[in-house]
Image (cartoon, rainbow, N blue to C red):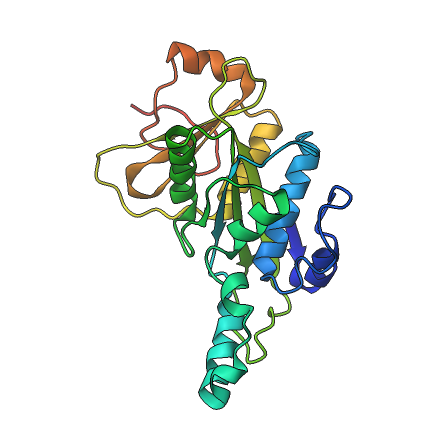
Length: 264
């Protein structure tokens, strides 16, 4: 996870993290959206903490889940277009400030040739992203999928210059997801679905970050309610035997980010 003031984004453009030598040119992120910069930074931080530096990601997929990526810049560009016409619009706008820019840039940085695309774009991106990741792993038999979530917090109204509003924070979380392996010493992620009626419950990115942090600090299991009756379960390596033996039952009610008790 990476959380930085938008004022330090220019420095991250030059060096977004523990980048392997010779991987990126100094200008690689010159035109990228702020969320793309912090998202790639989170990927490199995850690679370092997960001992993945130097790993071959050429066959991996990449899913980018930004929230309102490019809103500040596009708002300013539309006003400029009204005055100057097409000459006032930069050709870098579409490749660097649209929904798929985050995943596309990360795939280039990792030299990934697997599927990459943007998911969500506003609210409800947590559930959509995990379902998309599971679909890619199952349908295309990929060795892994990067799931990268980003947002600006708080999300201030755009300003005429199109620059990030001072006082905001860029937040990103990156997860390297691989197919189920009962012998692995890594946590297990499962998505449960239900046909039951449920309210549209958009999970904040901070709730996911808190849940993962609690798991890292010893919690055996974290559950997040997703939109449309689904829920996300992240289980520590110590509880994998419970999953294999099917002794864990889905909760009926829970509090987001807290320990879960079955209420049924």
